[in-house]
Image (cartoon, rainbow, N blue to C red; front, side):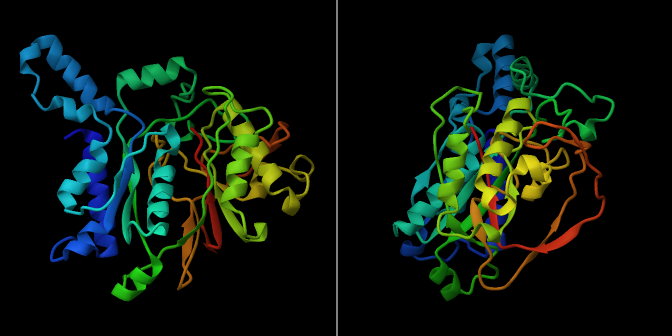
Length: 344
């Protein structure tokens, strides 16, 4: 089993335990109505490096089933084998958007009545010397701030210098609402109320100058909802020069009816952006929350919000610098609509 598959299996077990949903004692219908939508951005880099070393020593020492470790869909297949669920199985690979699109796929299958419950998310294991070198030569990885690594990942900061790689998995249990209420699900964290996808059709790494691609995806996801209810945007926030500016421009245009002209009003913080800093690391696809836009259903739930610990001098969407003072405490806020961006 590859390391990314280990991540997906452990995360799935934890998520299923939290949802109190297990195949033990289930009938055939329940087993066949619980599916899996788990993906990974590519092959397992950690395992690849190990097998290269084995091959150098003696090719005959390669394990016969090693090839299975290089098949990305095993992050989903092995969860199915371990959990015993026999419903629809899907495994996407869309770089940083893999986790969110896997959730969207699970949502679609439930909406089409092909499943009642879906295990959704993504896993990644790319923190290897080779992966770091490849991302470094492409200019995506931060190579500055070695003396203060905790501040290396600083999305939207004027002195940002690239992302910080990480690895792990994030899994959500999606369930049809009536099914969840009927079985007495222990907790409902949120409801998916919209999804959006688009393609820039422009360049492999550089966003479209008019940011129309990301803007159309966010607009589609929020269709039918009031912008006033958008409590937080979980930005893709790669901490790269071009990526952050493009995303900030798209958000400024999306929320312009609320904030007016962002370039005149102030900084990116006016859009209520929350991003993952080095404390949570960056995996490709993103770990931790893999969700799409969602709002709480049933009981009201609040969340502790981490301050932007690595943001020192914020760069507004206008491109001009603006001093920013970090808050060190945590605020407790009520979730309304949470918009999650993933760009690949």
